Image (spheres, rainbow, N blue to C red):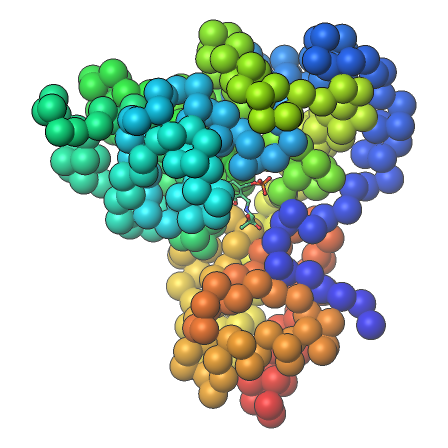
Length: 345
Ligand code: TLP
């Protein structure tokens, strides 16, 4: 039985061409700065994002943590959306390792309202910590992959600059945002001082993320990366996959987006399911099953038995993520399986 894996776009396998590039990569010890393939990927990433420098990191989680450590001082506070990945899913690293307290704010479809940020920025007061950073996320994972608008990012960045507060963008899926917003990725990155993005999500590389920003910021982040044990050696073997991902995999993201819309349209044919297609901006579809006869913990094992792997958010909602290893036919087959289970049990 073929498995159709909607759990995440992190589950993709490298293409044969990507693997071939990895095997052929020129290598060196990256802690000495000798790995030409890593250097090429860092330069390419910085230039694509319109920033001065880049730093290859093993994971998005480490990239975000390095950004927080490099922008702030321990004891400061970072403003972020209350369902952001940094706040919910990064094991509290910002508090434990960076020593930074979170100031979570409720967003609307992942967007932070400007007046809420204004209210959250700390004034000078002997009792208060300083606001050291604002973090945003685009596309926003928990908001079902919705893209944050450029207007919202612009407003936030302008306010942040006025208050001398740096902005970090968790752009794990920034290329999905660029595809939806129909802009060059630089147009998104320009509203943040630093950007983290992932090769290992929609772009299908097996490992790796990138942090970009000013040269001074990246030098700091590099030292922090060493401290966290992220100074890797002949890591060009992985960077080669990143170069391939940037050059060859970005343009196919529109297929994943079309498959996500197809999935939502087909699921809307099922009694009790109602997905607003306008809210499907990228490759994530959050499906609310609460008006069907089943909870998600009843549904997930039934789906699994039929080869359909999914990630439940809670008892009502299951997240479906489309990616390069899911075809249009897989989407149709998956929705047929779901229909049958909901209708017949
Ligand atoms: N997200 C993963 C899980 O951790 C939930 C997923 O399957 O979506 N920022 C965002 C917006 C992310 O979605 C993720 C991963 C990360 C950062 C962290 O990246 P990694 O997994 O490379 O540490």
